[in-house]
Image (cartoon, rainbow, N blue to C red; front, side, top):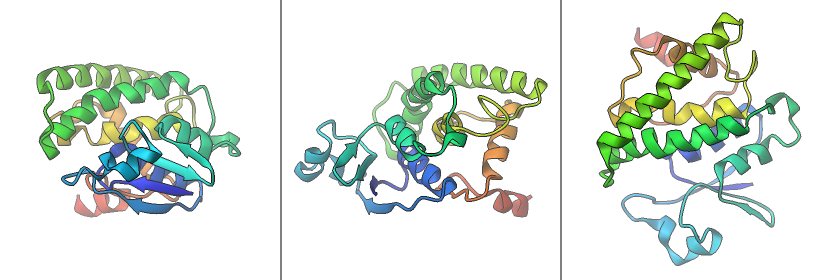
Length: 203
């Protein structure tokens, strides 16, 4: 499988992370998203007329939606599957809010930054409330006591929220959830998201 990838993209990272956690190999094809806008080139638009990343190619199958990619990577892995559809929609909204705030602050994208941060904070409060309820029931992940693609979909833009000017300091349940994900065997990092042992070493 070939992943057309940008190292700073939260959406690309979730596919790299899912592959790593499930022991699947991806061939990474780097795309110069910024500043060259290579994802808008004629060659890339042939793969994805929408001009977005990531793009996953598995032989003749080409996917341009990260949720479809997560489902594809786990199609033979029932342990990663669950009642995830609502959370995959939630992840898209995280990308449209916290993700856009990060693009504004990190890459200078033109965004209604106040609206993006305000909506992003609202989503974090909803996520915090859900995870707190899960903890009371003895579960740490979004849909149970083991992770599913729901967690992988929601994790990157949540973890990178501080890059868009939204602090996670007031969300203890979110921080515990992120720590649990960082503890998973096979976890890989990206710029702004470190492995758990690196965080412990810095303390």
